[in-house]
Image 1: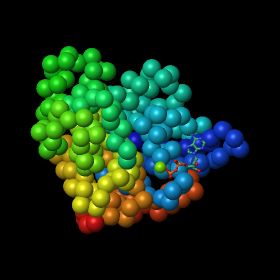
Image 2 (image 1 turned 120 degrees about the vertical axis):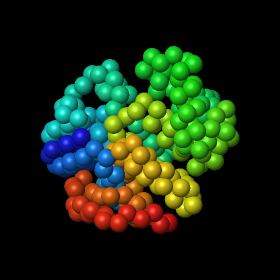
Image 3 (image 1 turned 180 degrees about the horizontal axis):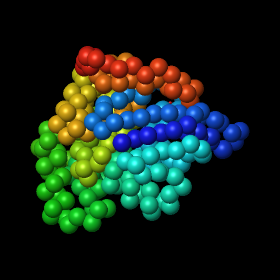
Image 4 (image 1 turned 90 degrees about the vertical axis):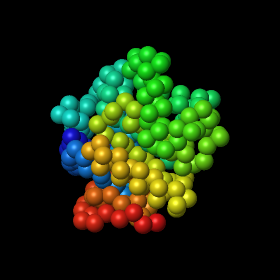
Length: 231
Ligand code: ADP
Ligand code: MG
């Protein structure tokens, strides 16, 4: 469902910085993959390209057999909304909207009516175990609760892939463990494809396949025969 071939990306801000150097990656539907690497190795750059938040220079990126290349922002946004759910380390919730409104937002962009949006948002909050906090603002929620809201928001538009950038980076170990259980459950129940960027071994050990990236090059790809959630 994701195919990346010889992908290159250079940032031209000051001195050109060649960040991704000929990346090849194939991801099948339902795979739960970790992308691991040191800080600055290009993980977020890769994830942003996969999420159509950023462009690449050369190579090819196919998402569901669609070549993602030089799209207008409007087209990129349509594909993003339809196909991709994002989860971030910093949650990226809208601070002045409550949990329910945050989760409902992707449906607003899809043109779903308010009553239906709110009903579905409540359903997803319930699935994530935090329906009781639907009317709380983000600053009234713990880190783990905020990430559950963010995951509900990522899922509500029924994306084909969840892209998570250091989803446990701001969470304590117990909450990180809960979060990995939750992501695994979603992966199993909905056959949801998941790509999780991390530098934590415990997160990588909980996935099916670990892709190592080093200085913009893919190194070892290790299959986990027995994924474990152990923090
Ligand atoms: P990681 O997520 O693995 O820590 P990033 O993909 O964020 O790494 O960054 C890779 C390299 O690219 C780093 O050296 C970073 O400073 C640089 N970089 C990231 N984003 C930009 C940008 N928008 N402009 C210029 N350089 C960037
Ligand atoms: Mg990063």
